[in-house]
Image (cartoon, rainbow, N blue to C red; front, side, top):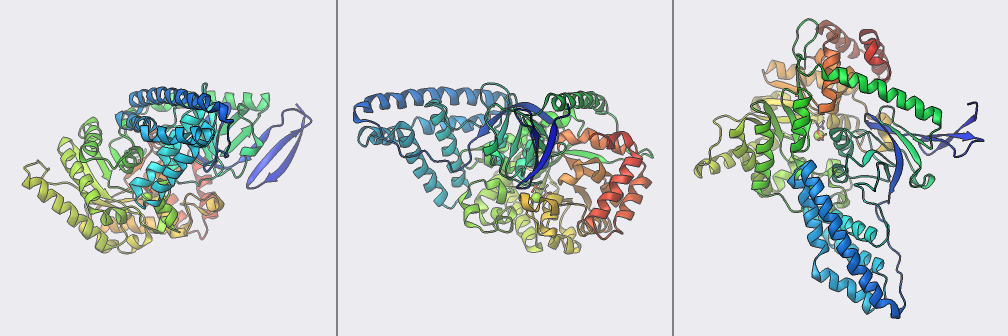
Amino acid sequence: MGAQVALLSIGNSRVRNRVGSSPPMLELQGIAVSPGVAIGKVLILDQEGYRITRSQIDSSDRNNEAQRLRQAIDEASSRLDEHRQRSAEKLGKKIGAIFSAHQQMLLDPSLHAEWLRLIEDECYSAEYAISSVLNRYAQAFRNMGSGMMSERAADIRDVERTLLESLGGHPTQASGGDGQSVLASHDLTPSETAKLDREKILGFCTEVGGPAGHTAIVARGLEIPAVVGLGTFLHRIANAADVIVDGYRGRVILQPTEEVLARYRERMEVRATRTTKLSELRDLPAQTLDGTHVSLMANIEFPYEVEACLARGAEGVGLYRTEFLYLGSVKEPTEEQHFEAYHQVVSAMGGKPVVMRTLDLGADKMGQSPQSDRENNPFLGLRSIRLSLRNPQMFRTQLRAMLRAASAGDLRIMFPMITTLHELRTARMVLRQVIDDLQEDNIPVPAKVSVGMMVEVPAAVLMLDHLLLEVDFISIGTNDLIQYTLAVDRTNEYVADLYTGLDPSVLRLIKQSVDQAAKYGVDVSVCGEMSSTPLCALLLVGFGVRTLSAPPSALPHVKQALRNVTLADCEAMANRSLEFGTAREVDAYLQGRFAQLLPEMAIGA
Ligand code: PEP
Ligand code: MG
C-alpha cells in the first residue's frame, strides 16, 4: 500500500509504473474486443517476419547436425499428430485436417533432401536450412496471386515454427506452451485465433488490431478474453511474467500487484455468479415488459458453435460466416466438405432458421495473402461478393452445397457486401443456374429457399427501394456499415476512436434501412456487432428491428436488458438519439438512459 504511482505515456498506451517496488506494474490501454478477464503467465509469440540468421557449423559437425534435424522432424511430426487429434476432438475434423496437412508437408522427402543438402554440402545449421528453404516456398505461394494459395504461406510458417521449436525452443506455437498462459503477440490472424487451444490460452493481447476485425469476432466466438491495438509493448515484457487481460475495459496489466490481482479475482467471482443467473434466462422469451418479442439469433463461424447457440437459447443462426471453412482448410474446400459443414449446422438447429452467408473472404480475413499484399486498400478491393462473382466456379460449388443442405431444415442464403443492384442480380442469376443444374441431376432442392442480402455499404442503403424488390430479407452488417460510412478501417488501432456505431450518420442509415424494409414488407435483422451490446440492442429495437443476431455469449445479456424495459423506453431512446449531432452526445445520452433503466446492468460491466 501507498507505493508511489507514476503515469507515463508510451505510444497509445498508458503505463502505470509503481515506483519503489519491484517488479513494476505496467498498465497498458488498448481496445477491448472480447469480454472477460484472463489472469496468467504471459507467453510471447514472435512477431511475424522473424528470420533465423544465417549460421554455419563446423564441417566435422555435419553428421550430428543432420541427426538433429531428423530428430526434430520426428518430434515435430508427433506434436502435429497430437494437435490434429486434439483439434479434431474439440473443433471438428476440418480443423484437425489442418494439422494433417502440416504433417504431410513436414514429411515431404523433397524438403528433407533440400535441408540435408544445405547442412551436408554447405555446413549451415539445421535452423537456417529449415528457415531458408521454407521461406522460399512461402514466398513462392505469396507470389502466386490466388487467395487460396496465399493461405498456404501461413501454413508453411506454422510448420516452420513447429520444427524450430523441436530444435530447441524457437518461436512458440500460438496454440500454447505447457501450462495455462495469456498470449501476447504483435498480431494474430483470424485463423491463428481460431486455432488457439482454449484450455491452454486463457486470453490474448496484441500490439495491432482494431475494434471490429475478424480476429476480434473469432475471439468472441471462442469466448476468449482479448485486448488488441495496444501499440508496441512486447519489448517491455518477458515470458512468464504475470499478466491480466481485461477484455471489458481494454486493459492489460503486466506484473500486477497483489492488491490489483485480488480486486480482479473478486470481480471475476461476481461475474461468474451473474453468468450463472443469466443462464436461467435461456428458455424464457426474449420480450420487452409489454410483450414485444425480439428474435435473438446467433452469429457463428464454425459448425461446432451450434452447441453454444442452443445452450444460450438462440432462436436460430442469424449469420453463419462460411468463409471460415476456407480459412481453416488447406485446399479450397470441396463441395462435399461444404455440404458436410452446412448439413451439420442445419440439422443440429432442428428446423430453426439458419442464415448462411456466401463467401465473404478478403481484407483482414486473408491474413498474409498475396491478394491483400497487392491491394493497397483491401477493404475497398476484391472482397466478399466481388470475389465470388470473379470466381464463379468457386461460388457455384458453395451454392450447390448450400442448396443440397437446404433440405435438412430451414436454410436461407445471404449475399454479403452487395453494393449495386447489378451485383445482386448477377449473384441471383448464378444461384438460379445452380438450382437448375441440381434439378437436372435429380438432386432435391426445396421449392422455396429464402434469399437475402447484407446491407453494409451506404450505397446499398441509398438503393434499397430497388434492392428490396429482389430479396426476401435483409440483414444490416453494422461492422462494415460503420467502416464504409465513416471511412474508418475497422481493423486499424490508430483510428479506433473514430469507429463507432453511435455516429448520427450511421444511426440514420440504420433507421432508413429499417423504415424502407417495413415499407416494402421485407424482413430486416441486424447481424453486426451492434446487436451484441445491450445498450445498442435496445436502440435497434427502438428503431423497429425485431431480429438481432449476435455471438452466442452475448445473447443472455441482450435478453436480460430487453426483459427489463418497455418498447416505449426503446423507442424514446431511439427517437432522442436521432436528434443529436455527434457520436459523443449520443453516447452520453444513451449511457445515462441505460443506467436509469437498468442500473444493475450498467454497473461493473
Ligand atoms: C458486418 O459487417 O457487420 C458483418 C456482420 O459482417 P463481417 O463482420 O463478417 O464483415
Ligand atoms: Mg461485413
